[in-house]
Length: 221
Image (cartoon, rainbow, N blue to C red):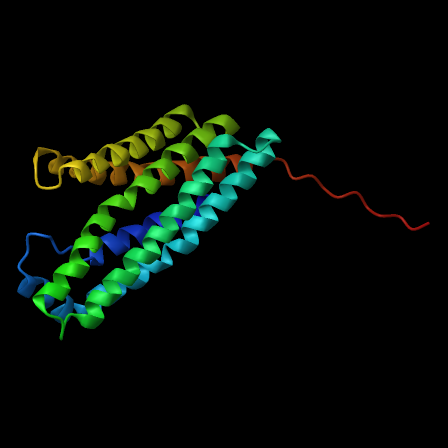
């Protein structure tokens, strides 16, 4: 779980850095230039977006194993995090597909066709962080239930999920005052980085402290 969490953080951060982030308010000509002149950078970002699916699903699976191993039962929080992770992974693949369509079609697409692709892409870019928020908060609460990390680490994860969830209110009023609430997601992602690193450190320290039980020798009869 520690490795998959840190891997997800690194890949997602690289995706955000390489993403050109076109806006709905941009002229179609500028959007076309972004995906034509910056096609290499955009392609790298698309690949990284698709790549996040692996650590997302690995993170969810390892969380369920950890929760079951420590509590002996199926944790509701771990199950919720696993379900949200599956939705988030699907959103990532869809986002990568729409971005790829823009990169492939931008050179010859009309302004209207670019707008038809940019609209869903922009709103999906925001909406995909809804399952991400649920995944993060539920996973943090699952680790609290399992008692494997300090309380402050748990609440950093919950705060990250809450901020990302609040940022989704921007979908209610994209061009109005609520649109600026989307910036809360940036702080939420920074807390996600802190949470995954702190959680990984706690889990690794916990693993190193566990005694190694030697296997009893097998005697022949």
